[in-house]
Image 1: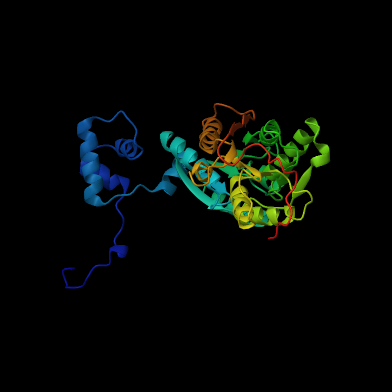
Image 2: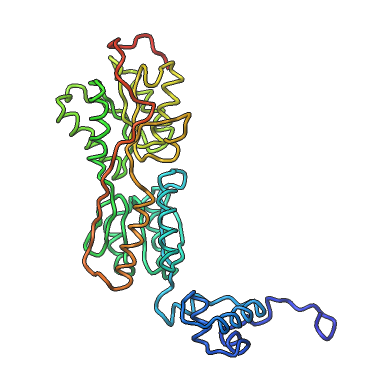
Length: 354
C-alpha cells in the first residue's frame, strides 16, 4: 500500500536500469553488462554482488537498448516451413544447441510453405533486428531472399542460395533418391514407383534423382510416378493413384518419411503387406522412421547437423571472419529397416480395391 492507503500499480513504477544495479552492487556499469552477457573476467565476489543486486531489483537487461549501442542483438531469426514435420524438429534442435553455445538466442516463425507468408515472416524477423537469418527450405522467390540478404547474413537450408550474399547448407537430394532406387534394385525390384512430394525444391530434386537412377539402371520402361505431398495425406493420395496401375509396383519410394507413413497406412488398408507384397522407402530418416512399429527404411538426412552447420556459417559472417559465400552439401546415407525386402514371386496383384 502507498502512504495514503492506495495500492501502487507496479506498471506505473519505473523499471530498474543497469545503472541502478551498478549502484546497488557498487561496481561499474560495464561489469554488470559483462555478467548479464555471461562473460568471464569478473571476480567471484563482484559477480555475486551483481547477481544479488539483479535479484533484489528484479532487473532485466534491455536487449533493444543494448542492440542500439552494440549494433547487435545476439538474436538469430529462423523460418521453418512446416512445424509438423519431425525433420525440421531435428533442424531446430541443432540450431538451438549451437546458437546457445555461441551466446545467441533464437526466434522462430513459419511461412507455412506459402511464398507470400514467407516474405512476411522474413520481413518480421528483420524488423526485430536479428543478427542473421536461417531459412529452412524456403519457397519465397530468389529476389525476396536476396533483398533480405542486404540487411542481415542469410543461410538457406535445402535450397540453393539466390546470390553471393547468402550461404547454404543442403542435402544431396539427387544422390539420396538414387540410393533409394539402387537399394530396391539390388533387392531384385524392377517396378519401382515414386510418390512425389509436391512443388518444393527438395521434392523436385528427389524426383529428378529417381528418374536419373531408373534410367541409369536400365529401368526407364518401369518409371512410374504418382502425385503426392510431404505429408501423410500426400502419401495416401499417391497410393490411391498407384493402385490403378497395371501391374502394381513391387517397390515404392516416397519423397519423405511423412509421405511414406501415409503410404504405409493406405497400403495396409488395401490389404497389402509390407514388405511381402510391396517394399517401401522414405526420405529424411526422422525419429518416426525409427519407431519399432514403423521401422521404415529411409534415406538419412542429418537435420541436427545441418542446423548446427547453418549457425556456424551465420556466425562466420556476423563475426566478419568470412565474406565469400560457402555452400555445404551433406552426403546422404541409406538406413535399412523392416519395410524393404525382395520382390514377391507373383508378378502382379489382382483384385486390389481401395
